[in-house]
Each structure stands twice: as structure tokens, then as C-alpha cells.
Length: 387
Image 1: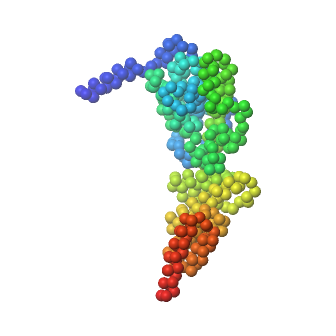
Image 2: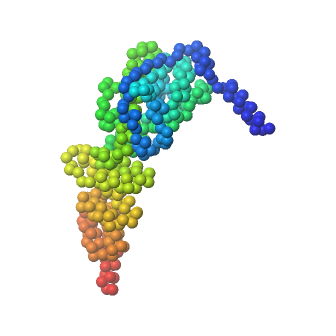
Image 3: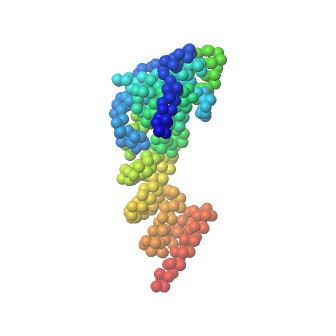
């Protein structure tokens, strides 16, 4: 009886609150402005690597780029919250051999229900949504706007492919910043001209509402259009990078991708990445100097993997190389000292190596650590000689 009553109440509630598109149109407000662009689709979109997508962290069973929606919003605030509205929503998709970008612009706040209604119709046609930081910002914001307008049933949940996180995992070590503008310039080799900074977007829209000067929005529309196009190019680039990590040019990138593979349990592939990243390179440029960090981190990560798997001899050779190349400071010395002391019991050789390290590393905590180890080694050496 209780279950039946609950079902009836839920049905009544749905009937009272579920809007129709006609209801949104009957509010008497001006509809959203539409702007559509069509261009040739990037050919790589039709040959995206499944392995690359999986390594990026996406569940891509049955993935079809024609069922993927590329989305970016421009909002009245950058921090979210109930008062933040997406006044411009740009979406893109593959249609035949073309890439279509359609932009929905609110001419005023009263047009939001109509815009959401039309977006709901677009969402119905797709199974995946590709964004840049959309999982944390764009999609939750749109979902809240559908809910606040009592139009939540028109919002369709799609599998999210947020490109920000795989981009950071691959390139942050080298680029430091991984916003979309940096990735366009450094990864996609595309420099925007006269681009509007994102921080100025909300005020531009407020000025437009006050003056009705549509020219104030032209830069925003172009900024949004380029964002959508860049999402497609970035997805292609990321897929290629994650599919063939060892073929990348930067040691920092190869090492970063090796870490991804190691966390995924692809041990052999991770070791190949670490070995490739650790190879000595001529320091002929600023980028090569920056990549040296990736090389030393890769050597250390590889040695730790070998140590955990019991391949001590290979790990030892890497620690010897690291000491010769001055990589990772005192760490490879300590690993060699532990090996000489506990595994090989070559105490005299360990004392000699400890003296080298004491000459090289002068920080008080390093001196203390090495001094204590040397004293223990000396006692063990003396006992072995007495025996």
C-alpha cells in the first residue's frame, strides 16, 4: 500500500513539474539567438585510438565520434553558484565530413528557458560530451540551470570526456600551465589573435544587456567558437600522445606518460617510457635543460620499479649512472649504500662511497644521515675483520 501511494505521488509530482518544449516557448520571451558555423572536420577525429582514449581514463566502449558533443559555455561568473548563468552555450559535432559549431546566445535572462529547451533537444542526440574542465564547471552549471528552471527532465546525462585532466597528466611538467590557451599555443601550434581574456567575458555581457550593442558580444562569440574547434583538435592530439607515449619528443612528457601507464598497471610500457625519457640528451636549449628533470625522475622511477620486482642488478646499474650524472641528489647514493651494506656486505666499498657522498652533499640533514650510516658501516667492517 505504501509503495503504491509513493508511486502515485511521484507520478503526480512529475506531471506537475515536467515541462514541455512548448511550455518553454509559451513564456512570451524572445528566443535565443543562434549562430552556426560549418567547416571540414579534422580527419583524425574519424580514427581516434581506442587505446589512447582508455589510457586517458575514458570508458569508451562503443565510442563513436558522431555521437560525441563538444561543448563550452560562457557565463556571468567564473566561480559558479546559483546566481551564475550560462548566457552563451557553444556546441559542436561531426556531421558527415563536416564539423558543425552552433552557438546559443541569451539576448536577455528571460530567454534562458527557451535556450535550455533547445539544448535539451540537442543533448538527446548524443551519448558523450567533450569539454575542457566541463566535468567540474560547465556540466554541473547547466544541470543546475535546468533544475532551477524546473526543466531537469530535459537534461540528458552523457558520458563525460573532460580533456583538462589527461592534458595535465601529459604536459603539466613541461608547460607548468595547462589552460586551453597555453595548450593551443604550445601543443596545437595555434596562436589566437586579439582574443578576449576570459576574465572580461562577464562584464562584456552585462554591458551588452545595458546598451544592447551587439558588437560587444562579437569577441565572445569568436572566443567560444575557437574553444569548440580547439576541443576537437585537442582530443585528436591527446589520443595520439597516449597511444604512442614513447614517440614523444620531450623527456618530461614521456616520463609523465610513463607515470600514467604505471598507475594503470601497464608495467612493461611504463618501463619503456622511463628508459626512453632517461636517455642522455645534449643540453643545447632551454627546453633540453627543463627536460633534464624528466630524465632524472624517469631514471628514479625505473629503478624503483626494478627494485620492487626484484631486478636488483638492473636497478643498481641505474643508481650508478644516476650518481655519475648527478641525478636526484643523495637518493641513489643511499640506495647503493643499502645494497652494499645489507645485500653484498662489502663494507669497505660502502665506506668509500659514503665518503664520496659526504664530500658532495653538505646540507646538515644529509651530513647527519651519511655520518650515522658511516659509523655503522665502520663498526660492521671492524667486526668482519676481527672475525
